[in-house]
Image (cartoon, rainbow, N blue to C red):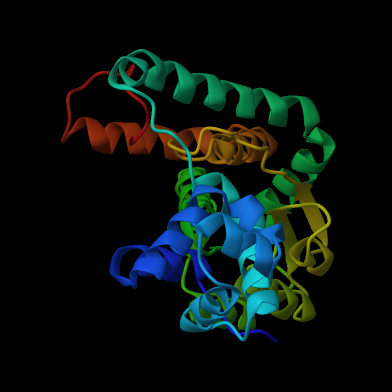
Length: 293
């Protein structure tokens, strides 16, 4: 396995602090990373106006073994994060007129995509499992997935469902270890590669729990779970705003919560009434306000 190396960060440091020839090479590379990742040592030297041995020394100051290793790391950086290297920031007028539209349009598009592609029969099956569970354990790690785990707990407890969300990897495994056949475990992972979510799913399943993954359909987490609600994050070309995929995931959470409430039936209404009653004591008594939000 190759060592983890942030080649772009190291090149930027050489552009600021290196020798004159290093700064020239670094500026050339950062200005056209695609060219630099494919160019020969002679082409790099000619374009930067330095000697070939200077290029070799430059590569070694970055922690690379030579030009081949340098080009490997550069191509890897380009493949993984190329869109973040040389994006032009929008001007002030564009920001003021486009930010609200861009965010709202992306959110709407993400929700409409999930509405059109989601297998609702699978969602209804998940709701049925939650409705008959004695306990629902919800796991999610990272930014969006941990937020979804907490939101799912927030949506379910008010229906009278015993639900607990865990965002710490060790606690996820521990909670899964005490699962029983009457337990439902729901695992969120946008990528499907979150190790702790996979482990928790495998552990809970071996103890007879019903396991549900809300994740990429062809991922390791999907393979580990008994039931899968497939989710694929669409490309979001605007790199200056947060990714819109979380709106689609929120829609899935709300669909599952709504389906669960309807599956349980009128029994959920008394709990909702109590929530409204208790909150009205401390807040403005406006029945049109969202329940507990």
